[in-house]
Length: 111
Image (cartoon, rainbow, N blue to C red; front, top):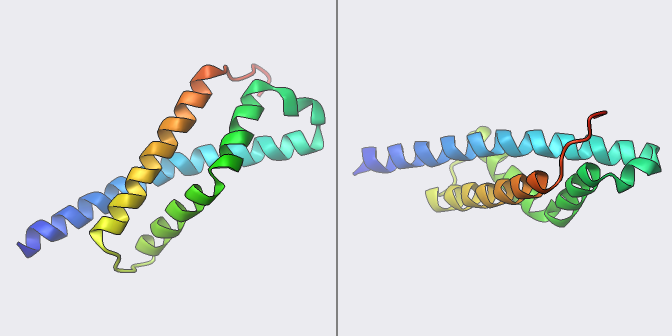
């Protein structure tokens, strides 16, 4: 029973790590685009920039919560499997929302 629980925890932790890496890449791009728009206001109306900045702004709290769990697990904290699973599921939803928003607009050729 202990082995099963340990395997389940490892699987959930691995899934969270994979999802966080994907989210982190999108967050990094969104922050870069937000900074570009701040320096060049004409970029603020670009649909690709707008989609990323809105996603980052609207889901800032949720992204922070997922990041907090991920960082805790990575630093060796012992969290419950349910807490890690909840963070992983939230990450999956955030990835889905970001992917859908990105699919609605096309990346500009100059970016």
